[in-house]
Length: 115
Image 1: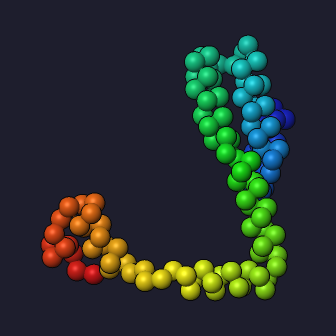
Image 2: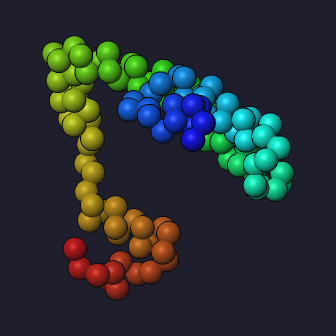
Image 3: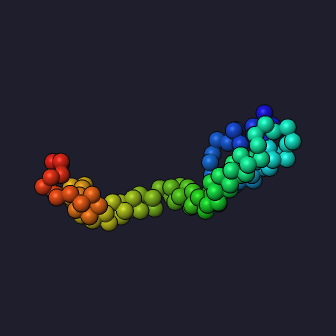
C-alpha cells in the first residue's frame, strides 16, 4: 500500500483539510503509475467521482469548525438548542403524512393508513 493510500486510510477525523490534497494525490498516483491494472477510462471515472465528493468538502470543514466552536461554548450551545426546539412551531408527523398523501402521493387522506 502506498504511503498516500495509507495516509487516507488512517484519517480519524473527516474534517481534515489534508484529506482533499491526499485524496486527489492518491488518484494522481494511480494515474501516473504505468503498472496500475485498471484501464485509463476507469481512472478517469474514479477521478471524477473523487473530485465530485471533495468539491464541497472545504465548506463542510469550515462548517464543522464553526459547530465545534459553538459546542465548546456550552451556555451558548444550550441556548441555541432550546431556541431551535422552541422555533419548530406546529410540526406534526400526522399533519406531514396527510400533506404527503394529498400533495405528493395523490391519495385521499381517508385512505391513508391510520397514524
